[in-house]
Length: 240
Image (cartoon, rainbow, N blue to C red; front, side, top):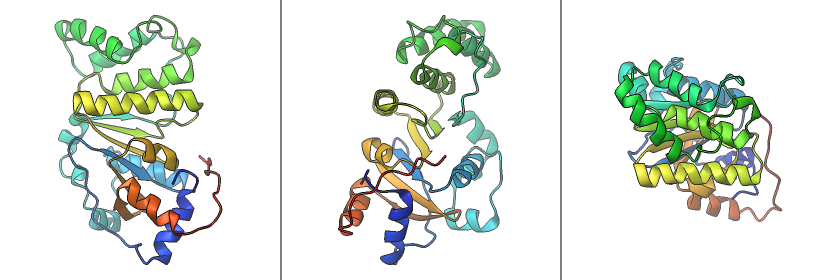
C-alpha cells in the first residue's frame, strides 16, 4: 500500500462506492492512523480533536467524535504533538521537560521522579542537557513526544509524526510509538499523508476526505483494495 498516494486510495474507494460518511471511533489501546490528502484538512482535523476548534455540524454528526463530549477530560487525558516544532532552541531538553511538568501542575516530588523516568524511557540521556537547537530532528521529535507524555496521558495525538525526518529517523519514531503502545498501553492517534507510516504500525486506518471520514478499516484491507487496481506504483505525495 505504501507505493500509492492517499488521493489514489480515495479515488479507488469512490469507484468501489465505499465513500460516504461513517462513524468515527477510537478504541482504547489501539494505534489509529488518520489519512488526510491535504495539509489544511489535517490541520483542521487536529484542531478539532484537540478541542481548539469546533467542527461544522456535519462533521460532528457524521463522525460522532466522543472526544467532543467533555472538553476538560479530553485536555487532561490527551498528550499533543504538533507537526511543527514548538521548542525554544536555546533551552536544554531537561529545561523543556521541567517547564512543561510545571505547566501540568506536577509538584516537586513527582517531577524529581517523573523527569528522569521520561528521559530514560525516551532514550534522551545523551542529549537532554544539550541546547535543543543543536539536536537532530529525530531527537527533537523524540523530545516533543516525551513532553506530551510527561503527565502520563491515556492518549497521544500526533500530527505528521515522521514529517521532515529521514528514513532512519522515521523508523526510530515509529518504533518509539509502537513501544509506548505495547509497553505502556497508550492509545495513539496520528494524522498523516504518508500511507507507509500507517501501514507500518497501525491497527486501523481512517481515511478523511472533504472533512468527513469516508473509510475506516485495517491496513491490510486498504492494501487489498489498492492491489486490485493493477496500475503501476506511484510515489507518495509529500505535499505538506
